[in-house]
Image 1 (cartoon, rainbow, N blue to C red):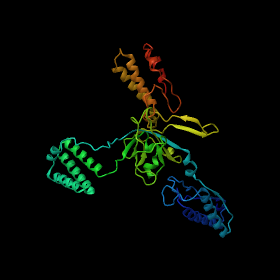
Image 2: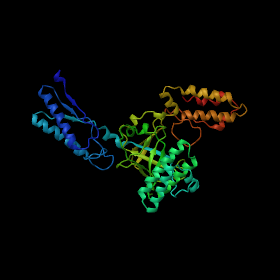
Image 3: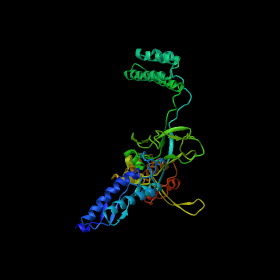
Image 4: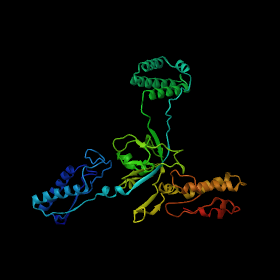
Length: 426
């Protein structure tokens, strides 16, 4: 059977940072290939697997975990030269060389676009104490009072670092007093105000803002959560404005890991613009893009917290005035679709809720009852992500949705079968 062996396949690893490491692994594999030929195997093909990395952070450095120190040509040359040297030394015919560079082929072909819907806000002006200073001092325990006195003395001497130290100790002691019940919530708020005053007075940098984004890290960026893979993330509009704050990103899930707080370049926050208005809706949208995620993110994403995948828009290069064309738009899974994945039956769930509304609703208020049931139907058909309230448009990933107009239904004189015939959407 040895003569039937024709292919040697191996895999060094993903995201190989340098051609030196690549050449070392390929040379070893070529040695095995040559030995198999010597033993009588009918070898023809050597498959080097994956490993061709991409430059996520733009550094082109082998010292970065998210970059590579070679070009595509240098990668190919290192592979071919390593195989040639070994085969020539052993007198073996040169094999066919195959590679499976999936990451390098498809990473650039996907962009995740998501909206920041709100952000934590911080007043730049020093706050006023929520209670009188003397009253606050009188409520302090002896140890906390000593910390306050040390804080005051350090402030007079201009010792900034010491001020921060005693402010932190004072806050911790006051928290302990509050837990014991010997300090009121007003005094606890006052010590927060005092510590913030101290921080601003000594020049502590502005706090990092938290931007709440309409996406699930676990569904759309699972490699960040699972293996701390970093991707380029940046705003995709308002690019003519200088970012004025720094922030981290918090997703829609209820999981404490649902955040992005590590970014390209070793940064723990991202330069962002302040949200205009409330940060959502048509008035002031703020969108960010995550790039180079085309290799595995969509395939790895699940339905954590019952968030399905995002909608997909296919964009192709064209010769038109904008050099691109949208060739297909596919809505993401609806809530009903996600429930089916988890082996629930959204049809029965809707019917149960519909009957419950009819059972307890006011028989004389048909329009109100219709509106409630219509809202329930929309919940099953809408995607599980945040969306602006619109008309009752039932859209599903399967394309079987229908359009429902509230007014026409409400004026149909109680013809229930006709009113709800459009609900055969599943």
